[in-house]
Amino acid sequence: MSIQQQTKEAVQYIQSNISTVPSTGLVLGSGLGVLADEIKNPVVLKYEDIPGFPVSTVEGHAGQLVFGELEGMQVAAMQGRFHYYEGYSLQEVTFPIRVMNALGVKRLLVTNAAGGVNHDFEPGDLMIIDDHINWLGANPLIGENDAELGPRFPDMSSAYSKGLAKIADEAALSLNIRIQRGTYMANTGPAYETPAEVRMARVLGADAVGMSTVPEVIVAVHGGMEVLGISCISNLAAGMLDQPLSHDEVMDTTSKVQEDFLKLMKETLRRIAQEDA
Ligand code: HPA
Image 1: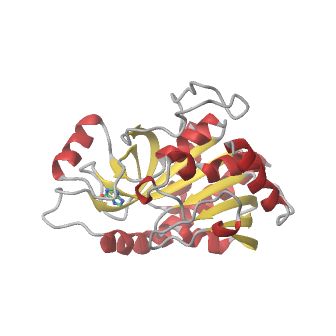
Image 2: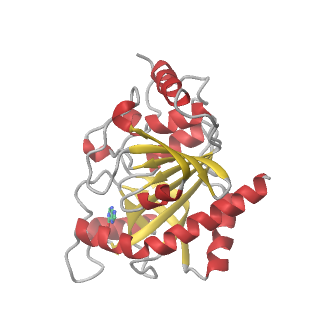
C-alpha cells in the first residue's frame, strides 16, 4: 500500500474519533510526555489502534496520540515516538508526521532528550534547536517522491522557524528559565556515542546529540509545516565527565527538568495561540 493510502486510512480512523481540526502537533520525547496530560477534554487514541501506525517499544514512551485543547490551541500530541534504532524504517518513524500533516496540522513542536556537546551546557538545560545535522546515514524521503506531499528536493535552509524560536526564546525569558540555542545532531543509537564521536560532533558544529527528531523534521518541512524543536539536555555527552552514561541518568534529569519544560511549552503555546488569534 502507498504511504498516501495508508495515511488516508489513519486519517479516516482519527477523524471518526475527533470533532476538531488540530492546528499544532506535538512530539513528546523520553520523559516529556507529561505535557499531554495537561490537554483539556482529551481524546486518546492508542497507536496500536490506528491503522498503519507502528507500535512503540522503548521505556518511558506511552504510545498514544492525544487530541484536545492546550493553552487555547487544538493540538495533536504524540506521547511517545518511533526511533530508527528500534528497527523501524524512517518511513515508519515519520508516518505519524504525515498523518498529522494530512489532518491539517500546520506547525510541529518536536521535543527530545539529548546529550550536551557544547561545553557551556549543563544537564537540565533546555535548548531551542536552530538547525540540525543528519548523521543517520539515511533520509526518510529516499524513494519515489509523491509531489502531492511535497517537493522532490525540499529546501532545508530554514527548517526550524525563526519566528517560533523567537517566541520560545521570549517565553523562556519571561519565565526566567535558562535557555540555550544550538545545533542538534542525530545519530542512530542505540549505543551512546564514544568520546571520540562526541569530539567529532563538536568539531562538526553540533551542540547536542540525540537519536530522534531529525527524520520527523525533514518530513514536516517536506510537507510544508513550520517547526519548533526543543531539546532537554539530560546529560553531558560521553567523555565530557569522568563517569559512565546511562538511560537512568537521562530519565532522571528529564524528570527533574519536567517542571521548567512544562512551563516553557505551555507559555510558548499560549503566545503562539495569541499570534494566531
Ligand atoms: N547521546 C545520544 N542520545 C541521547 C543522549 C546522548 O548523550 N542523551 C539523551 N539522548
